[in-house]
Image 1 (tube, one colour):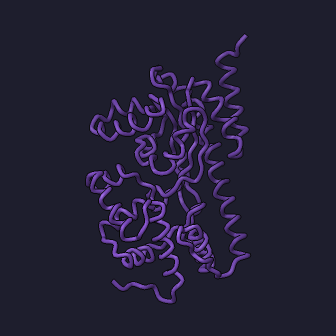
Image 2: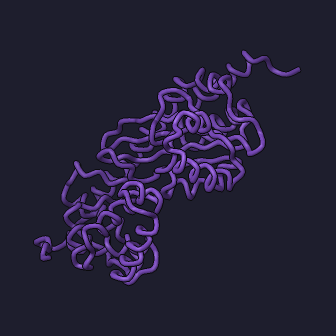
Image 3: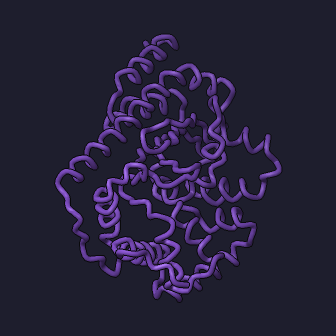
Length: 318
């Protein structure tokens, strides 16, 4: 004999309430809700915001159909997600958003058809909210998917997720803050044990995160948040590095968007230019820095900026 709806609801609430650690999110939150919502996939994502800009994907957990989407989503596609951008206060579905925002049809078509449907996902539903941390804010998302050919999420599905929405916000907010606390503790230990000793910056940029992390610690720059796994470069150092490579102001705009994880489509939308123009700018940047990928480009610029940050006086010659 199966459990009643009330018993299933209680079991889900109890599971969420007992989840205090990122390692338990998949089994304690994603799995029971994925089953309850009859979803083909489920995902949890935590992304840092600095000065109202989406900076970097700190961590993510995915199940089912969402596993194949996660790397691309974290590497910039979240900029295209209308639900992530809007952070709706209540559970929202993608297809409902599409119907209500026909003015975004072209952009939404690319996100839905080229990204989601390519992985056999028809509709998504989730909750998205901001968490205020010590150094930066976070956007937390919990989302679920339905397969192509199946039913879209309904009003009843939104109600089901909404009933545990408050509990989910509390549990996931605690996890986001715990994640930041762990990073702060690691930074504190690094600050205690390190001296101003810059590792050699290799051509592929493998050491630039450590360079900037050590610089910030040595300068005791507590107002400059260094996101986990990525140091945030002082703007003047990056600008000076770009000038040394002969990068134009418009190309600098491209670099800034790349540092924030934007895709070509998102850069075109942000700068009101075509995707082809974005691609032309990227080819020019690769030629000027002697690289052949955006990862190598950012590593090359950040390595140069790290070297300038070591200089007694910042090189600002045009």
